Image (cartoon, rainbow, N blue to C red):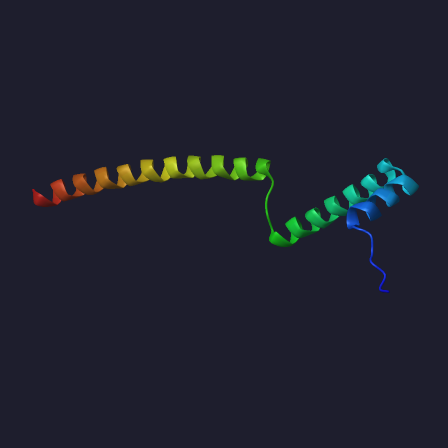
Length: 85
């Protein structure tokens, strides 16, 4: 007769009973956090703080570009008006 392994939930319950819930949970928690941190490092993601900082810089830069475009347009109109005289 073939040996039938117990369900995985029973195995985890036995581990929890032997090691205590906090010990196993803490180890799994630490391992998962480490794996996620490693994956995020490889993905080259930025923190929310870095993202917000760069968004502010981008918004200021956009404002400066719009201001400079308006100035160039005005100077071009003035130059065209002078050359027509």
